[in-house]
Amino acid sequence: MQTSQTINRRSGSPTGSGIAGKTIPKGPSPAPILGWTPQQNLFWRDPVGYVDVIYKKYGLLSALGSQSPRWVFSFAPEYNQRLMEDSENFHVSSRLEWNVPNTPLAILRWSMGNRDGEDYRMRRQIMTSSAFNHSWVSRWRDSMVSVTERTIAHWREGEVIDLHETIWRLIHAFSMKVTLGVEEPQEVERIYKVVQDLFARTLSFSTWVFPYDLPGTPYRRMLGTVAKMVNTLQDLITEKRAQGAEPTDMLAAMIAARTQKGEALSDYELISEIYDVMNHETTMSALVWTLFLLMQHPTVHADLVDELTAALHGEAPTIQDLERLPLLDRVVKEGLRLMPPQAFTRRFTSKPLSYGPYELPEGAMIVLSSFITHRLPSIYDKPLRFCPQRWETITPGFTKYFPFGGPKHHCFGQMLGILEVKIVLAILLQRLGMQLLPNQRIDRRTHNLLLLRPKGEVNIQVSKQNRQFRSSPVTGQILDMVDLT
Image (spheres, rainbow, N blue to C red):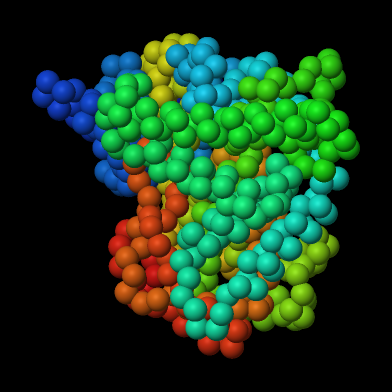
């Protein structure tokens, strides 16, 4: 693989393409008086759009400043490897975030994916031995099938549905069943509304423009919703501890789990982890984007329906069936390549160190992006095209393909998420025709969001599977992200 930079194996510094030795790559310039604040605001307003502009203008490595920069943008696979494997020098959270108080907001935020060191290793051992061992896979499959079939049973011929909200509700219903053991429709709906309210408030600009806990402020209202979510999960934990029965859901399994040293998760830790697991937003995003891409590529759509129908004859797939559906696997991989749910992530330096030509202080933030790396033409031919067939011949490693993060701090529900995407796709595509309503504006959700998800509605018309496959004209940011010609 050739990129415009390579790493010197002895020093770890980049060489070639004009940045040999300590030559500093170009990057954005600070604003008069305000310094780097405008650039940082632009990043958080639309992270995906910002890193795309930074890459196209400055290349694979740049920073806000040249002397001990505190923000670095790093997209080359060689750098990805260092960031993902060296967990001692590059942490997933900054030192300022390590010892946060046990407020409701902190409890929800500080799951395993945001922890480092021994705390991370302890939580990972608990999660691996309880909620995410292979003995649960068949149970997951059965729940996915029942929830999906119950959902589509209510769809009517010619009905127009918002794919974005519908898939989110489907994923939420499944999540409630397998993570919390909640199946009663009214309780599922109640928690769904709390989750939606929480997302809306935490992503609102008005919440964070004045982040003070004062009466009548959006921040105070957001904290009230956070407390409602924490109390809901605490009540479930208390109830399951009292029951003491054989675990039938992830939360109960996590309560019962112990490390090899006999350690258990506290209630606060249980709330953090189960909240992170139950919000399958990455799965929702992956499903919506993959269905969108299929509807916009009629030939691939038709070929996949043919494969599914020939192998499954209209039935839901078993775990074994999924192993003999190669096009389904390639479609899912390509959807995750082109529209990765976790479009970017960060690492923070744990001490002063050299990073390429830069001397970074402790706490410097390095942004790496699957959205950018997955689009490097040195790795992927015609990178903006949706081409599932490319996976017949390529096997990129984790430094070049990481839709769920790296090997040490990846999304812990990755296996569950991919399984869910495949099962839902197999059922929907066999039984339903789906047509995107024409001339919709398809944008990405922005503002403080680490995940790549649609903004607003994605309206489709459903029918029986009549094998009428055709694309629809669309507008919006999607045309900058994907080549639909």
